[in-house]
Length: 287
Image 1 (cartoon, rainbow, N blue to C red):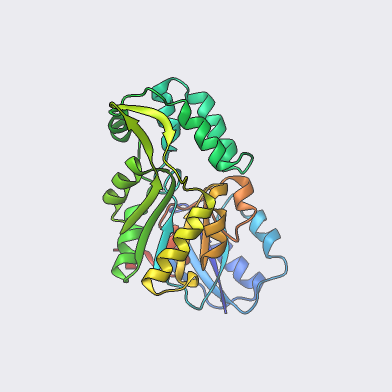
Image 2 (spheres, rainbow, N blue to C red):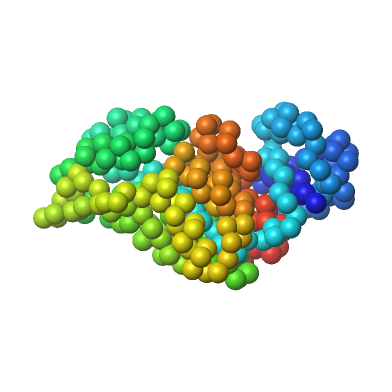
């Protein structure tokens, strides 16, 4: 059995649209997980025109299909930049270094899969050489904002006994703080090397990129005694594709076009609580 999930911005999901799709697909009774925001209905098989219908309503709502079995996951594996927070940390550091526009362009191309992740990271970090270590505190305080819904996502999954891991191609100086703010159980990221109170322009080795995120998925699930099918992963960049395609649920959240094209589950209207709706939690279930 499959579940057809419809998620829109709060107040924007039209009941007529839900009924129209349910009738067109021959689905079962619709259930509203949040009034005018999230609804779902069961299906026997994937409709042959699903992709065309999804594209036709993309401006109104996110339409996804999820298996009914093993729907509520035992682990969250999340990217940080532009996923759990609304910024790319390296872009914000680059603004402080006066090379913001150049670095932002490289970041966008790397996240869209146009550049090698490790090479692009080394190139960008080199441009930060000489920045005072104190700039990290400044960026955290003045430039970094959490993605809406993150705390509800983690608290609700924790209440159901799940584990939450933050795995980023960014930097431990940021993941440690974001992890503590949101309540992640653990975090992994790259290290910005510092000497004499300044950034050296070097990244600690080995660099955590696409393969390291897959390794985190393998290692953490093995340690917890669960399977990859028990995991919901979320990210937005090309370096997230490995873990997104391996996890039981891999969600492309406000992702780059090339990433969305390679992911079955896509969220463009909702915030991080959409990951709870995809697992069948109603808003009244949120912690």
